[in-house]
View 1 (spheres, rainbow, N blue to C red):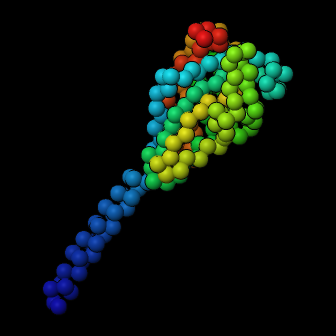
View 2: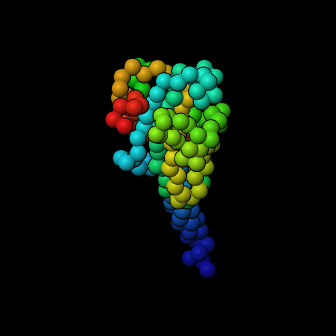
Length: 173
């Protein structure tokens, strides 16, 4: 019994260290971790639009960016907005304020249905996955046929980024 009383400080230190290790382990594996996958077989496009074409007031250009994203953490993760950034142009944002239409008629042969688009906010369950088009109806008037861009997913804890290209429609289609 005297050994326990004589070493109570050491026993307390050991329990404290174990508690710190468990806390750090729990924090590390519960942090948000989103992973974007390549979308080689889908196209990211933009096209000039009028305010009446899709029903978006003040729309001069609409962009469709296809994403595949998974939540690798054991807690749900909610993406509140996506921001599309291209060097030399204003950023374009997709959030809950962007109402998804039933159908986007891109041309006489190409349509994007609402079921193919991602509604915001996007909540990914633990170890969950989502894919679809993120709609940016208020984009700037891009001048190039292909624009290098960066997509930022904003969550409550952290911003996640991926990069790619958007091309002018109907080029290459």
